[in-house]
Length: 382
Image (tube, rainbow, N blue to C red; front, top):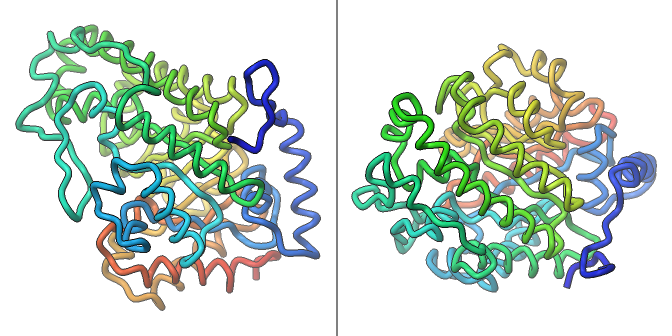
């Protein structure tokens, strides 16, 4: 069971005011003592300077290699995934646990056929899309995510991790955004055309998906995760235009984010697209932390991003996937050192890759990211 007590069947969580007060106390404590990962992350999330910059290497599929689990077991068995995540956290180093698996989870439970490669990330069978025409959006059906195979497994994974984390690690749940879920069942090119040619039909599908996702994040909060991250990849120059995102996903993502807050968890956001629309996504979702891979579309330098958005949300990032795959650990350490120098002063920064650590890459660069935080992320930043 969760560390949070239940009153009337609901978890009794600290209020936002209590969390902010605690973040300040943790920052003071960090000046003289080593903080726990939970204390460190909360201090940084609320723009305080902890003992050092928190680090989250985003080891997802690669975690299975810590225990020898098959990729399919990792993707479909909560105990297997939890064991892998905990082993990766202990061996490589990490300041948070998370129940992220892959972006096909939600679509699979709506009925989309998913392919499970033996050593790679599951993905939809786009040759057999669940939504093959605009008329199919209305055929989607609402269901209980607690009783569904993959979303139910993620909920159970959150329960296991929350129980094992106790008061040491924060645990983050996850869901793909509603427009992204439709992409998994329709295909990117077709969904973009549908949004322009028949937006009202797409909105029927968005209503159905959002209803399920609201229930999904509620269930994750109920098992004790401390935060829930929404992935709004389409809200970037890699996805749809600013105007189209604001019409087609903004209001729906807001409903999901509001449900996270309503259930006492922290709201987190992930967008690994090029030129993400920070301003729009902050407007609709008000994330406490924002994970990203590229500079927002309205900023040309990291310094400008920190000045413009660093007081609105904690920034999580943003070591590039290409760098992780192609550069040496020594080079990764220097990239991380420069990001710490620019983004860490004043708090509000978590060092991390911009997206998932490549699942079949050796873990030397994950260890390098953690090493950089330990060596160069001690406050005050030099």
